Image 1: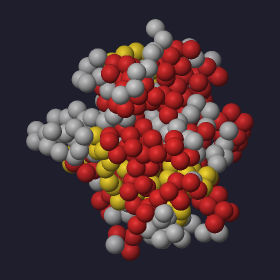
Image 2: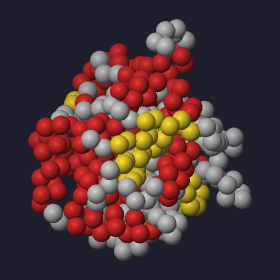
Image 3: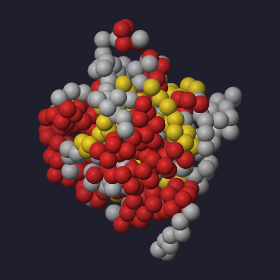
Length: 410
């Protein structure tokens, strides 16, 4: 296996922002000075004790970290196999893992003298987190969100507006996360002087994939320490859902050099991984290409045109994946699978019924794979999955698919 040739999986990216053949920096000349300045600021911040002191204070007293590591005992008993733990990042302030990263980027933005923050969002959780932190620090906030996602994520749209953000519906393409990111990049090119682009996932041009990962790895660091305290050893398997892949990279990264830990990422299989591309499983059904400033696995046609993916989950509805995930896939350190809408909905319901936890549709995909494999594993096998978001944002979508009538406020 590839790890025999590599001293550590935690050394990337290289000086060019590459994870093997993936990553890099494919941006316009207008943006290059901003990207280089951001890289300079982040490289300094990584060794600045005052930066991390501010981060740790906010993570503790504003976000509510550490998030609990929860033994799902009823679900474990129901499935009759492996012991299942949930890393409960949905209990963070704003209801997801996104705020872990947003805090770091906005502290950097303030150090760089930026007064206007832009962001893209799919499920709305990154947008809510960005609007929240901008409100805390008194910064102007503009969030680009696909028009389709605006409709299916109304609770989060309202939350962003309550927090003072301007939400811009994007009507190009299918009106989903890819299109929102396109428009955010156009805004950034136009407003380079005062604007900072707060990217929500481990994608985009270098240094974003590594920087977002570094802010999110607090998830895996906590999970590792908590598991050692609870069980006296590391988990056998860790599992997380993947769109761009920030929650997964946050969980995976601290475990990459632990050869005994099996790592599984779960992509959105939509209506099934098929030729019609009714899914967002980039690694399962895509091939390498360039999008949004980096080279990675993408859904694309024979001419290299990016295809429109599909998922019931707005946060997984992206036709690409973070470049570090593409690298881990190619070298075999992590396994990537897909889960359909139907399987995710079933997992959503089972989690509600067995644990009294309403998950977001994103981690419902990860949980669906847990449900699939746990019964066939021994009882002393330990699984840790990342419950990266709570499901209040998804109740109207789930109700519609389950045939329930729910009145929405005008």
